[in-house]
Structure formats: structure tokens, C-alpha cells
Image (cartoon, rainbow, N blue to C red; front, top):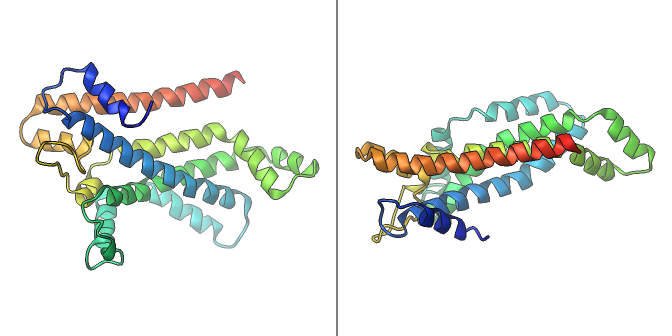
Length: 238
């Protein structure tokens, strides 16, 4: 099933009091932005975590502290920094990224990277030293040992990725600042996500609408939790 088909299916299953295409477009933007940000963050965070787990250097403890501290970054501050970076006065101003999905992805990338890195690092560090020693004793290179450790830590890494997704999909402040919560004239979302739509509807007193959108968001979160449980059960039975 393609990414675009998911929101269409969700809208077909529910008789929602919205204009045609509104809910499906909001769900699509939410999933597109969050999944893209988490995918990019994973490609960056996992190698960094493995490097920190294997390498020994001065200041390693400080770097780990910075990563752990990043898990508590205020999202509004992150949004302001990203907005400045893509504004006309910022270093990326020439790219015209203000109030775009790309700016939202950048913001969620910054927010998702610390938890993915920190949890992956904990999972890698938790693998028994004997696993690394066995890989090296069999003639494996450092890369071979790293791949073996990654295999052993796969459940922790999956948990890290899902934690990053949870951080991204539930974000409000930063995506509201950098995305602008924009819809087109026909009501189709440009940069409006489920969380920003809920915030808008609640402010306008449309509580029923906000609750419906909230239920859709909770369903997505429960799906993520189900994936975590599935991976956990698979890891136990192996």
C-alpha cells in the first residue's frame, strides 16, 4: 500500500464532517513529513550511535551528555532556529523554504535525532562484549563486528526509530512556526498536520471536529505501539 493510499482509506472508513479531501490531505502531510524526517534521522543517527558505541576518544562522555540533553530540546526553540535558517536573513534563505513541508521536515529531523541516537546508543552499548570479541576472534573486521552488534541490538534500534516517530508525529509548536498551518483555497492541506489542525479547531470551539482528528492521531500512535509490541514479541520468541 502506498503512502498516499493510507489517508484515503482512513477517510473512506469514517463519515467525517469535513470538506472532501481535507482529512486525507492532513493525514498525508502528517505522515509524509514525519516519516521522511524520521527516515533521514535514522540514516544519520544509527551510524553516529554505532561510532560512539565503538570508538574511544576524549570528550566522549560530553558528546553523550549533549545527545541526551537534546532529547529535551524545546520544540518551539527548534522551530524558531529552523525558521531563521530558512528565512531571507538566514543561510538557507535562497532556497525559499519558509512555510514549506521541507522546512517542517528539517524541524522534525532536529527533534527526532536526539532520541533515536540516544536509544540506539544505549541498545548498542548494552550488547554483551562477548559478541564483539567472538566476531573478531572469527577473523571479522570492525565493520563485521559492528554489523553483528547491530543485529543483536535490532529491537532497541527499532524502539529508537519508533520513539523518534512518536516525537515527530505529535509535534505542534515547531511545525506550526515553520509550516504556517496552511491550506489551499479548496481546503486541501499544504502544511497543515493533524496536530496543528487539532489546535486550530479547538481554538475555534469546534471541539467535535478536534476530537475526531484527535482520534485519528491516537489511532496512528496506537499503530506505532502495536509495531513495537510486534517486534518485542518476535525478539522474545527467537
